[in-house]
Image (cartoon, helix red, strand yellow):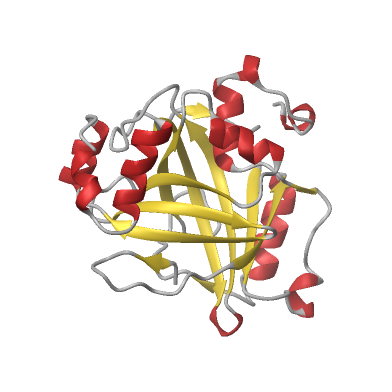
Length: 256
């Protein structure tokens, strides 16, 4: 499990190997049906119209500086690096997480702490001083806001089809219909993320594992039509929103 800052107890941070690929529609469907007999569906997912397997919607609000230092660190390959986000599921406020996504070499990890709707509303209204007295991530976000001027920057919204293999700690997800609001920061507005980021049918495949993938899975990956993806969803959305400021070699083949 991700490290949690709930109360004063801390779950150890779980560093995992992460790979990403960009799939076309044919590769997505082929891989989806190849993996389904081998892996299990995440219990939090549910059947949705038009999707081959159960899914849920994720919306994240990413924080960065006015100069997009976090984006620059990503493109430069800075190591280690991290970014903050607030995340909700299926457009609801029942589960809200403040998360710190971290990367160290080829491994990633995240820490999480729960937030309430009232707390998120206070944060998005610019009232962050109360976070200074909260242990863990709350205080870290407040410090980043005061010293680096971190503020909410970009909404990232997508549909996730998650598959898992618990005995080996493997998680494979298909992220579809990636979209972002144009300078929108309202997590709970159902119409805030309507700008498509990728070409129709494009799906992001993410593979997360504690160790090297077993042979029976590695033989299925990658497929024809799978392109290794170095960019994060946050970076992809920044590129779409501010194309004039973008300078990345992957921009050539990611153009719709």
